[in-house]
Length: 403
Image (cartoon, rainbow, N blue to C red; front, side, top):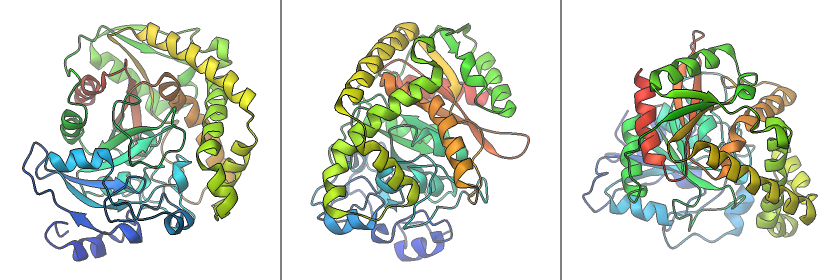
């Protein structure tokens, strides 16, 4: 493979077999500055404004109806200032409203680590490009699992950052209460390098004291992931405990998922409803149904969901304290097949959202640690930590992944 900075045209021609980049985003931009990220290549999810490059948000109607941004998103400016190089705009599920990785208009990026299976979304192109070795880091967003799920499906490390820890100026929103910037990499080192720049105000040192588990989550995943999770917990060398009863007042993890979906849907419609009503864009069937459902959520339902969310947030944060970590699966198992039925895809999405929604509801960081099962398929175990423990979580994940 030709290095992207040496010959961008040849690079994108060679990379076409992975299908990770949108047609309007096959560009490369090297930083003019030397810095801690010099030599690091970063692909950019097509939600982030890149000066003088169109932002498409995974939908041609969005691409056609929005002006080309004159300025970089705040996070891109920070990466460039630190010496990183930007390599292409990567495919996202439409308006980031999915965790599977299909795109009705641009296709499904190839999951090179699990051929024939979806890459996960909505940061699908970023994960696919990193998994294929095309770039070092894939920049994306995570609202309900859009970093953690593709990381698990593609055998990558993936970080969903503490909500609002990174400026989202210049990033197309979906549900602002939950939207967070995140990134994926093949090993923990590039993940940590990016964090050292983007989360420089955080202390990377933390005296972790306890690893918590959530028994209810075990029933939602497969035996391979459960076994690896148990091994990770042992490898942490921390005292352990079980957060029994945490989810019961909310109807269990399924109740939390419904709570999350209600508030996410309401916010998604508040964010994009006027544009959808006026523009009438063509969406893939699953995305179209999701926005239709979102349009029916009432203000009263959203307010009730928000009140419950804040209560759950306080309870989970209290349980973790400053030095506790919650270990739970990053997905319900390996990636489903690209040609699985719609019913099967929806079932996988629902099960997985039960596992990913706690971090979003609590506005907390979570990292996905890759492992490969005996069947050769990638999976992920998640570590969910206190607010602003992102950098310390990466170091803890490095330790767990090496054990």
